[in-house]
Image (cartoon, rainbow, N blue to C red; front, side):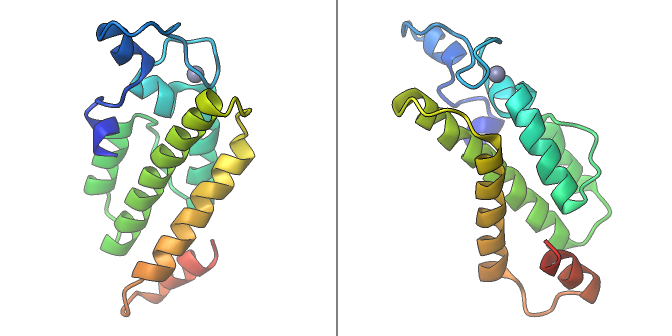
Length: 147
Ligand SMILES: [Zn+2]
């Protein structure tokens, strides 16, 4: 997650800088140049997944930019619990997209947005079950149990 935030993941634009021969286009859409922002949030596949996750969580942030999303979570007037859930969802999204990219490159598998979204939801539900604090306001408890 921090590597994505700092734009340090080995995306194709960074590999080209290091002299590695790659074609430079995004492995998910095969259209746009691949960099961190594109790979995680600008690609149409990512936008679709992020929108689905936002709708699922009833999350009204307008931005799809990773640092801005993290800032939004920090500044939002929502409970600490909800902030943790949204941060975990963002991390799960980045991780699932990265795993999908690896699978596309190494296993030549096809990108499956529905599977990515299910992966994110599954990861988040497990994290919530494991780290749910004992004292949670009813409104937050209802929100989480409705997911
Ligand atoms: Zn793309």
